[in-house]
Picture 1: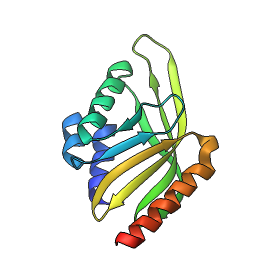
Picture 2: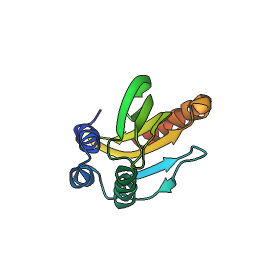
Picture 3: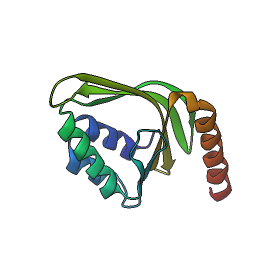
Length: 136
């Protein structure tokens, strides 16, 4: 995992929006393919704004990686868990697939999938591997 990705994940865990933004390139993207996800976010600023909204709704929200499905030079496909307590009370949890994209030492993107979409996420991971190999 590139150092910038580690910095970004640490900043998110600490709820440090400024540090998270500093660790991401301007063209960072996130595409949430889940049924109840936020959809596509086309920039680091949009991603950080979505984090700010999540932190506002759940001040103790935590993100963790449970295990890695695939690791390659271009990225990682992992099973992750996000959980916390809503501001108005009530615990919540989401288990998902997280695909991160790396380019050199940069974290350039993230895609989220439902657990039952493992085949789709694996296919996307392989698609990105082929693109990375063609451009590398």
